[in-house]
Amino acid sequence: MRGTPEPDLAKATEAARDLLIALGLDLADDVLAETPGRMAKGYAELLTPREFDLTTFPNDEGYDEFVIARRIPFRSLCEHHLLPFVGVAHVGYMPGDRILGLSKLARVVELFACRPQVQERLTMQIATWLDGRLKPKGVGVVLEAEHMCMTLRGVQAAGTNTVTSALLGMARTDARTRQEFFSLVAAGL
Ligand SMILES: [Zn+2]
Image (tube, rainbow, N blue to C red; front, side, top):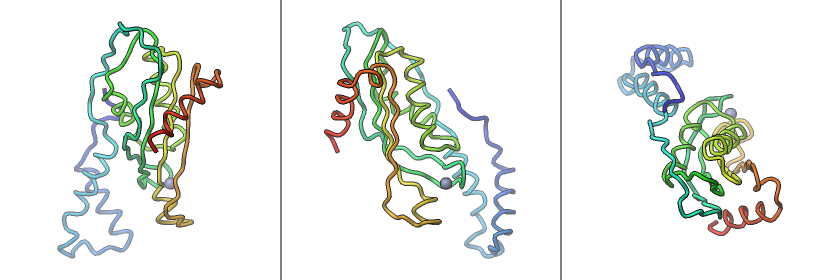
């Protein structure tokens, strides 16, 4: 499953060269000779999720408590500056009839992180995807991330973390379930 079309590396390299020259860099300098190509590859990698298999399994045991993967590392690019934002995701759901392999929760995060994003939308997309695919009783997603566009430039608020959350189903409507989700997420922090 891919979120983006195949990147054109030759064209991206050429464009990166033009951008760096326009920014006043001297590309005749040997140390920068390979930089446009590396930039193109670097951005392509940040924008291309690895392919993965989305197989779900029947919930034979009838497990209906939260399944939560905590501290899934992720990186994305902010759509305003194309600078990285980097952090961890806590992703949980209360299974209905279908369950998902545990490693797949990390892949779902990656699928939506590998595109220009804002953290709020990324959080919602992960939750909505799980809700649509698994029809679970509830979904909870919490993202914590440092945005380079905020910590390295602009206000330069180094060390600031932005936290977002998305709750669906019982995690949204039932206060006790919501409380349980947040305490399970917080337990490991
Ligand atoms: Zn930004």
